[in-house]
Length: 94
Ligand SMILES: *[C@@H]1O[C@H](CO)[C@@H](O)[C@H](O)[C@H]1NC(C)=O
Image (tube, rainbow, N blue to C red; front, top):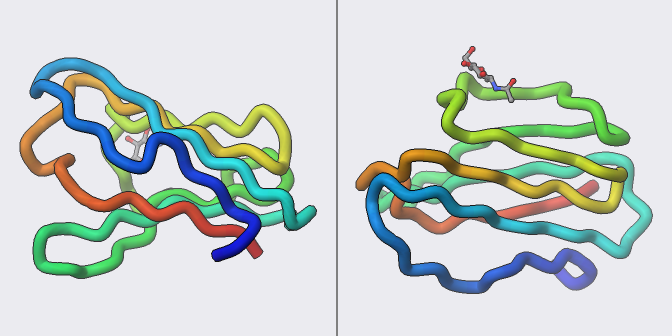
């Protein structure tokens, strides 16, 4: 929604490499989330942070490392990219 900014909007990269997705919210919310929408359009929860602390991890593989330097940012680093990682990733806050 308005006030949540994801960068980049699109990324095309090679299997086996690593990448990062950045998210910032300017809503002064305490909670931030990453969701993955797969090729079947199913939206799956990945990570939930509350005030920089990880409070929810829907058993996401350890290749995915989230980092929350402050409560307004939640970045996602993905190592050793696999075909199944090709998806739409949504960041949200509340
Ligand atoms: C999330 O859970 C999975 C499965 O328990 C674990 O392998 C992974 O390291 C966890 N990720 C984080 C960021 O804690």
